[in-house]
Image (cartoon, rainbow, N blue to C red; front, side, top):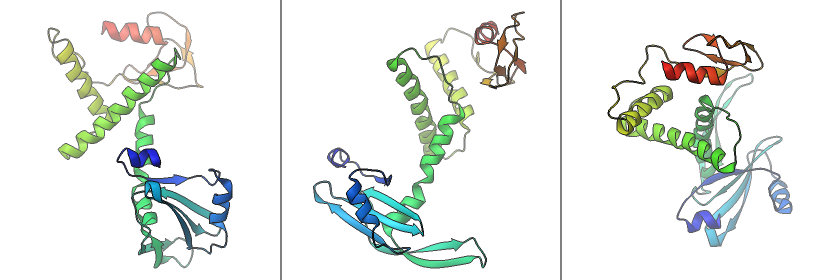
Length: 227
């Protein structure tokens, strides 16, 4: 929290019950009824740690230097019979956390949608590949926000590649990357088949959705480069 505060940033962070110091985390859960909460402040970073007993056996720990601890009314829904909605009191930080926590889940889902495991070379290559992928997702999110368009991640990546191609290789024919069918090799492990490219016949687990063929990495790369 000191680093976040000194950087001029703010956050609402959920914490594991196993976080240190354990004595503090255990004390924060003591004598709490369902729907009640305790908080403790850390003045140097203008931060608060708050523990909320959301269910009989569930505790939510939030560390924040952004959201307040003010009591607000929130609407909850009862899923078991008799179903219905009802109003309860909760700290504002819990309401803020519940409103925006799904954004992290959506980002993780977008990250994994086109994430491909590559052969490990070294730490520098691994982190470079990851951050190129992550920054592309950030760019896609920013593009959708600034243009108010619901462009798919795949279409954004295709347009980005085309723009990079036109900038870096302007003398080559336009729309070199455009295809009627998207050729995106995917892994179908643990399923395997024989490579159907270039008479290779090697055992592989990679499948090209555009060609509807199984292929090993080298044959897929060589075939599509010729295309």
